[in-house]
Amino acid sequence: MKNFGKVHEKPESKNLQDSGTGEVYSLVLHNDDIHTFEYVIESLIEVCNHDTEQAEQCTYLVHYKGKCDIKRGSYDYLLPYKKGLSRRGLIVTINS
Image (tube, rainbow, N blue to C red):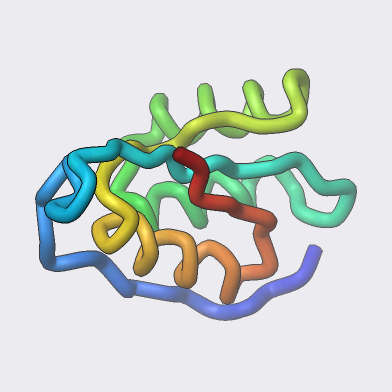
């Protein structure tokens, strides 16, 4: 298990829609063979403000389905979450 330290980066904005297009995006977490369940759960709690149950459910979905939408909102709203999870070594994308 790799340890990238704690990331406490949280976006300020609560806008769900992108002001330019009105489009709602999804932050998608992808499965990998590197990180433990505990590490991914801890990352979702600390970076994305998930509660324990939500983080555990997302982690199991990622493990069994290969990916999971973990947050929705505007691109600008999701970008700090993506960066925070990426800094922890997790594979995340923002999809429309």
